Length: 273
Image (cartoon, rainbow, N blue to C red; front, top):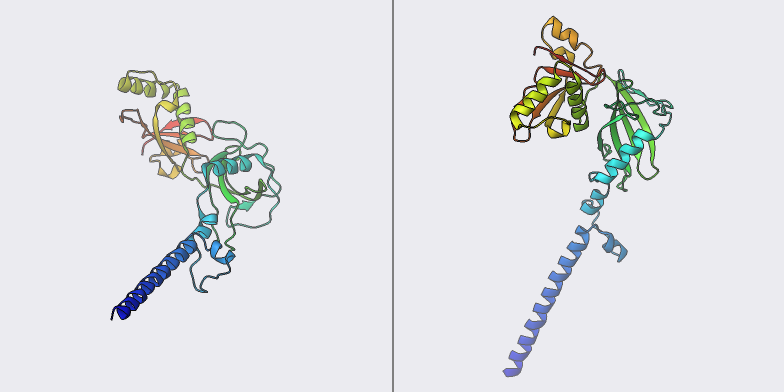
């Protein structure tokens, strides 16, 4: 009887050990597949035919650009010559043909178009899952009042495709909002009022746009009411125009709701809305 009990106990122990081994092996395989499936393939295994694409592989080409990548893409887009392209686009849009970017200007009047946005380009679902070294950069050229979209290859550091659009006004950047404040401050009618409002709210002098908390939106001339107001901003839409929403550091507002700043022309106007 003691021998039978001993044999039964040993068998139970072996079964428990085997069960623990199978669970551990399954967990280990799951961890390998969740990490991208590469280790499993190198070891001679193969994922199931209908298994979803591993998350790690997807992230390699669909993740957001890092700040460093975005800065480099914007630098390449502003500085590099574009290649001829014959791909047509709708309406007033057109592919650039051999434009080297010479003469482009930013909101402050400096050389090079104004960077607006940098992101991963849209990706076709049927495309290869290989890592994508491209970035799509939007810029605004104040010399020609055109929105430029340039596709940059970060690996070759070249612009591979570029288009221009007239009359398209994406949301302004902080740099453009600060350029708009400088125009208001330089205006002999509006500048003193903004400085006085800031001094009244803070007890300090306003000397730089960086002292203000700024938000802004693109302004289209059709929003203006009245013949006089419409005349003052009739070019907004073709020109790059913005409205400012201004607060001082403690959160108090400075009323700029009726001021429209034409960044392309470098002037401000007061209108009815």
